[in-house]
Image (cartoon, rainbow, N blue to C red):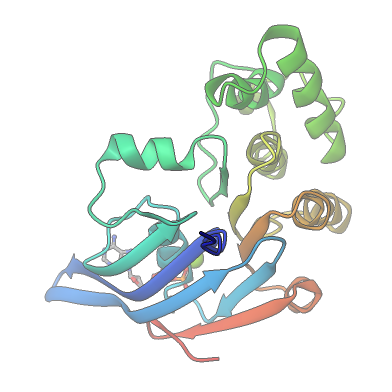
Length: 232
Ligand SMILES: Nc1ncnc2c1ncn2[C@@H]1O[C@H](COP(=O)(O)OP(=O)(O)O)[C@@H](O)[C@H]1O
Ligand SMILES: [Mg+2]
């Protein structure tokens, strides 16, 4: 008996997503029927005007914001309606998230903030975790800031720590919301190179929101949002 193997599930598959949130004058439809998928190794830029729903799309796709209706699948696993526990388990070690609020732990150094991601994901511990964390921080140009606390770092440096923390586990799916937004050219290139390497070298799917035309043009595919929909 030969049954063809199931094709490997896509890293990300969204179907007919509706997101309605309460607004001052009643419910507001933030996402209005969005379908979207990302394949392994694919780098997708999400662009569109401010308020078009880009950040909301990423939050839904990462399982951080529950959908009103529709299907959100990460690696074939349905997240719509899943418990917080299941969401956290679905993401752990496989999904890297770089959002505008960095959520670094204030009482840990840059090195510890990155190393803890490896420990939480059960990938490495102790000295091995610190060595890998140092390498990730060096790749974003922060080799000289390992022992600094978030409060001692500039906004752009904190952002790069957040990128290193997301990248260090070598996730198979990465979401980044304007990861180069507040960075100067050199720091922005270092961040882009590290994120792109996850896709080009490790086959991760990378979904990134950006306003920068050169960054968007360097991606494999561009998705344009307007008014809660994908328009091209
Ligand atoms: N928590 C929320 N409650 C109500 N409306 C929201 C909320 N978050 C975002 N919005 C609205 O949803 C729309 C899309 O926002 P967002 O996804 O942040 O867009 P973008 O990232 O493209 O700038 C905007 O009109 C915004 O005001
Ligand atoms: Mg946004």
